[in-house]
Length: 319
Image 1 (cartoon, rainbow, N blue to C red):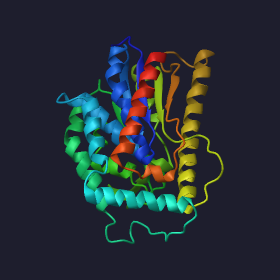
Image 2: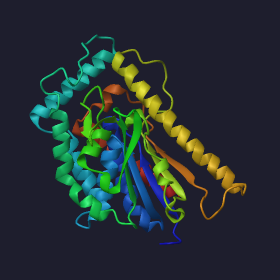
Image 3: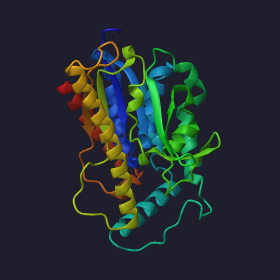
């Protein structure tokens, strides 16, 4: 294992679009060791944090497998009951009408009587499939580092929760889209969705001893770098702004990785502390709008999971 090339996997967030990430990880995680890699880290934001945490737990628990935990979790995230199906259809329809120019009143999560229903439902789903109390015990020195990204809106800073600090609250904070969910309080500070900052966290994979730094970084990217035209509804504008904020932050971090690579290749940095890191991307290559990020219909979720599995298979073939 010591001489195996080391890889870290970073997962972007993007609502239901991260079902693509679920498909990717279901294929990648079992293949890492089979292909002779040493997995040294996993990170994620929002839906990427949900999926990365599930995959990490499946790898480490010894009671199940990463593909099984991810599949079971996403099966429960999908809207299946009659009430949930009707609610999902109404939410997606409203978002699509708004994109077509039909005005709807803007309501914050604090202005309706069911403001915390979605978060309570997500918490129940997470805790049904991930034993968060066991994470500190499973996060041993030789385990892949687990990193979840969020924003501390009290302090006005990025925040990452690492290994034993990854709790259900931390994952909920990472997924707390401010237009949909209330902020999550952790240690007296309030936290919002990490989509506004590090989407996904990258630098934490390099703030480790040299022997645990990745030779390769595999990035699962679900938010488009480019879009045709301009968003027109308020929600679509906000969504694209969040995509840009996350992608700009991501590209800045990747630019730093590339600069370090250049300095290493030129002999300006000591080999015992730094190494060249190859960045590989697995990209959701579909034109999808804001409304589909809210769509939890089983058919849509399963379609994206299949896309992710196929993209991962092609990625592994390219390796």
